[in-house]
Image (cartoon, rainbow, N blue to C red; front, side, top):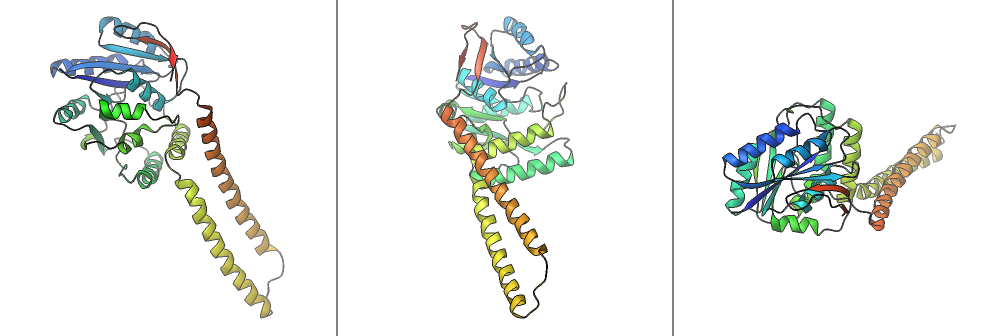
Length: 315
């Protein structure tokens, strides 16, 4: 029988992790699906790891991976994929906002021959206006970069073992799972789901962390910001030509304006564009620097599984 690995990144999820394990494990057993749960503790500061140790003792189908510190959700996903042994893998959130019933539907589609099954959001649940607007802008940029509609994309995906291996073979350190899992191709389909309210606890994503997450993933996956510099430069050049012609006409007609207001405004405008452009280029150089150093995506301090109890390592 094929085995399904369910990867669940967790960061400070002590309030919900037991409910998550009970809900998913119960559903898998009810559906008679051979499964393993791969929890990745992303350097939690609460009792998440202690609870995982207890859950592992009670259920040998649970694999628990513990990071030496917080490395971020993308690293946790890739660590889970690397630790999974199933014939296919599903990545889902720990807070049960991704419905476990949809995971069963995705697994059945995999049995029908699909190799990548993406769960797309029918509705985004309760979001404030700022978050919703920012998310729309972010996914618009990413959709243009990958030429795939990511407006309703999520990390809730099923990947066949072939797709998982393809992702793990990619050498880049700043990897964006949500886009890369679509970029790898393979026979794909989608299912819709409604984002649920959290079972317990609060979201760990602040506006600041979301902005940092978006900038990191945009620069990691696409050169669109660099290309935008060229278009802004062309716009400023055309604007300068129009303004220059206007200035010459006024000068030769004897209507030239006195003072330095226009000059000051031009210097401020062009200077701002130059500084923003240098900032974007500098950010890309920083990402290149990080890739060249080739530091590991994450450092594992402990692993609990059926045949491993405490190896540590880096990837």
